[in-house]
Length: 473
Image (cartoon, rainbow, N blue to C red; front, side, top):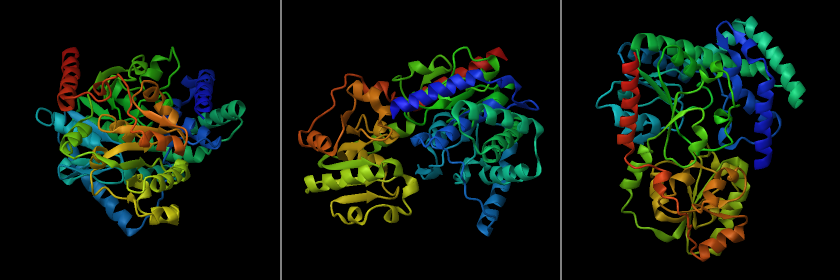
């Protein structure tokens, strides 16, 4: 699978070279730069390749029920927070909210707020449907974006878009032999980003932020361009495993200046490990991971239980294999407790999607909520087992990790090759590693994965960027 993905990325980059990108415009908008990630993901979907953590969530349910209208009204009211000036604008693209320090928030929002709030005023533009804690004074736009994207898609037919879509459709069909759903791409990607751009311009005009920070999910190209045109530095904060398999960070050499204007200025990473490959296109800074650092301190007193294991779900793509592994482990290690951590989107209906046998095994404990902090289990369990998840990386300084080599495991190959993770090709190999109490023998410091003093490093790097901007202005 990994060679197939690599081949598709190379083919996509070659295809990109063949395009007349500068001619794909709608008024002053560069259509290709806005759609690049979405087009790549659609091509993969059409070719029946799973995107794993890169999976696009464009197929959103939409209905104008009373609850929706109420939440839409609340979003409109949140625009009352637009009138205060701000030094820092955080754009929240993370749908995984958590209660941290008693506040309903996300890792990015909490980490940067904690690091910067003493000296900088902070505003939040929340693009996700789950609202953040009211005291964060966020401007919530998820439902506004969805509603107006659909309205504009129905009532406004943009000539420049039609010409570009026809050109791209013919080019992709000729190069890849497939056709894409351009109406859906127009509605869920292009119009959504364009309307977000209108909102961002209004926020910039009123709030005058000096820096914009987000975790790029593939939809921040226009945000980068708008900020670049106004000399506002942008920061993309790491939110997943650094990988060669994300098209967001794969670019052709010698890209045009217009192309680069749609990229973030800075990339803030958790550590130095794997960062070298990003330095050609971004100004890279190491700032650590504040949430991880605080969580590790919180559970440092938890005693390791040598007879407990944690399996981390990667969703439906590898579900059958991981369930079988859990069942086999429960039979082999009958006096062990086997925790099986579901993905948040699996919580509600997992009993309908998992085998009955699995749910009835007494020493398998399914984690289907966030009532107990995940880091408690990472600290408690002797081994953390999975295929491809940021959780496995976060477990690195705390537990022994076993990569079960199915699905998108190849994103973890560097960690395996460097001796940071153990790996197994089969259930029996996983069992052998546990039975022999095997430990990874990597000589790379965990500090290179997660730099310590994250809040300090975040503050210092943001301050340095703003001081430099102030001097140049």
